[in-house]
Length: 91
Ligand SMILES: N[C@@H](CCC(=O)N[C@@H](CS)C(=O)NCC(=O)O)C(=O)O
Image 1 (cartoon, rainbow, N blue to C red):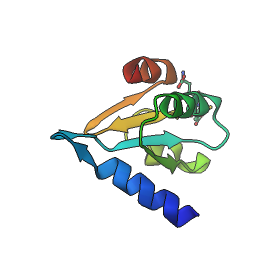
Image 2 (cartoon, helix red, strand yellow; image 1 turned 45 degrees about the horizontal axis):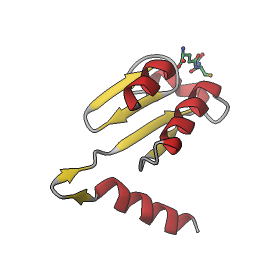
Image 3 (tube, helix red, strand yellow; image 1 turned 90 degrees about the vertical axis):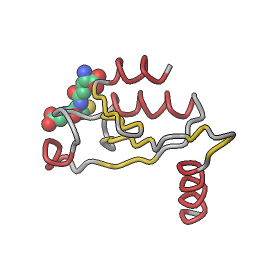
Image 4 (cartoon, rainbow, N blue to C red; image 1 turned 135 degrees about the vertical axis):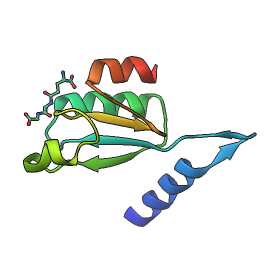
């Protein structure tokens, strides 16, 4: 089941329709983070293909591409943090 989901996610992350390429979307999330859950919900609501990178709570600042808190969202080469601006960005 996990393999099927990763194949679907891979296809979703790499497919292009009529020359419009869907960028790779990665959510940097913490398992217990309500703010991360908010962005996760927004991604699911928008039916966007995305991957999740679970941040080790002991390495938050080291593992995040920007900022000091989760969530962080990468869309292609753009990266944003703070859940509310991220949700507005997705909208
Ligand atoms: N205003 C931020 C708050 C994010 C936040 O506080 N995240 C917590 C986890 S729920 C965090 O990353 N804390 C890291 C730390 O304290 O080292 C947002 O809405 O994204």
